[in-house]
Length: 298
Image (cartoon, rainbow, N blue to C red; front, side):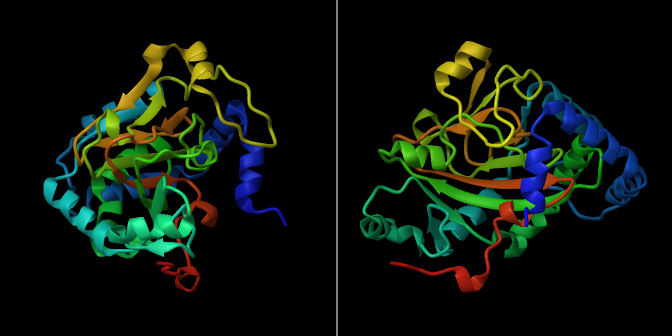
């Protein structure tokens, strides 16, 4: 039987259909949305950054216009905690739950795999109390709610390393180092936090400004596709291709229906924490894996 996730991706491939579905959902959820925003305004939880409603409105306006916008940085104490968490918790080569290893054993993992390792992901990170608390942050929820026009659901919490290696074309495509767009729900938004300094040698995230609204490409209804740099530049211009550089803690808020990719690091590794909020949730992209499926292999 076809899953809800695959059905959604098939039905919502076209922008006009997504837009119509979103308007219907907003109308159906307007009372729940109002109650959510009222409850959120009364919350006693301290946000990681002080903000005003006008700040939320500005960010959402930027998201609608450009597809992505910079957000306020995480405090240094939070970054230090998260980097420590990444050091003491197993990550998983190529997002494979059977290929777990500790960061200090990366060389051993590569030797076992017989190839340089481009990406290693963490699973079930939302179980950590500090990370869970951040996922419930009033600022994140306020932006997500206003952008979605509905009570936001936590789709996934994702953390991963990208390493400076000479990666194969297959691994680059597999791990999203080629331009593409995501179709994760009717409407969704992601908060990316750099947990390491990211300059041009650390594999910055790249997005194509305005490609969330101005669709200048064709994609088949029944399958996804990747886009070459040349295709993107020809369609949108080099000036629309934005490399996101920043120090540890830097935040990018993005609806990744916008064309985007990661650049393969050439000098230093990159560690990212991502929170995704949506109207519906799907286990296929939850980053949750059963404990029984996870194995340390080196």
